[in-house]
Image 1 (cartoon, rainbow, N blue to C red):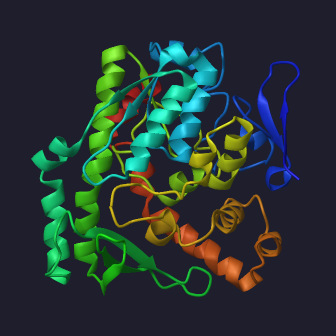
Image 2 (image 1 turned 90 degrees about the vertical axis):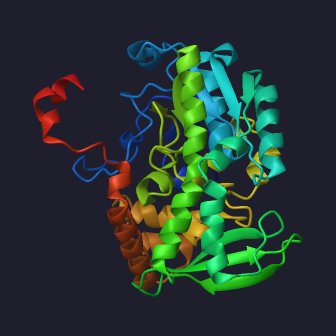
Image 3 (image 1 turned 60 degrees about the vertical axis):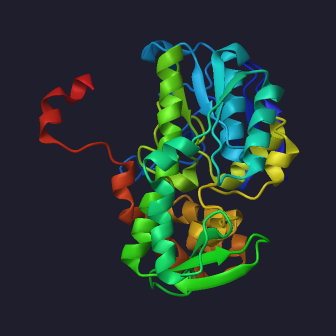
Length: 363
């Protein structure tokens, strides 16, 4: 039974019972709840050295910034980040940015604006269509689609990607499929695509995430604000973000929390139920309705439990019992997640260069 509580001394929001341990948000490190080896930590925490939720605003003062910019997509990650930012510094020091483009879901704009209005924060709306056309993002993607479906018509058909992988029963890497839907959402094409074409398709799609980052940093510079990132723990560990795109941020507020924990916290903080109920999506491919088929391939409870096993805070036996999987299945799942973590190391790494070593203490 998960219950929320407020710390009597300082009013910090917490949860009792989430994954079998107490979780105290705002500026208590999660590792105090689950002992971890710092040598094996592969992610950051919402903790004392970040101070995202500290009302004394140490981190803002350290960065010499006056507030936060948050990209509002209408999803639970960005919405919860905006709520946390407002609780940290107040609504007058938080700016939301809504960034539709010609292929994005109208619901993303609608919910993003609704979040800003509910929180009482200022927001800017920037249409990214012209920017994406200028860098030829749509055409680069469409040219790849035409190699597999010559009847493809941009604007009429919707493109998506499907990854097929037996995460609990095989060590084989995923197979990539191109999916095309008609204007009614009916699937009219599903073709396995070559790895080179897949990477080119992803590269073209990533223009959208990086275009959003450009706008966030424009407003951050304009208002002397810091960009509040929206990457969660699942995304960070598995590399489900775009480097210098949605992974670009000055402060991260939720990357210490698993995706399933975010839903509990969202309810506790009064997030719009429409946002909580919405199917998670990157909103970068018009035919991509869910993150599950595109990347994760699992429900979040199973995924988050397996990640705990991967992080060695839960045994394979306990993980199997919690998810209903057999122990060999859980072991295979964790190995596949470990491989995915290893192959996405570059996304989490800062620039490498021996020239930094002499001045590392100043960085």
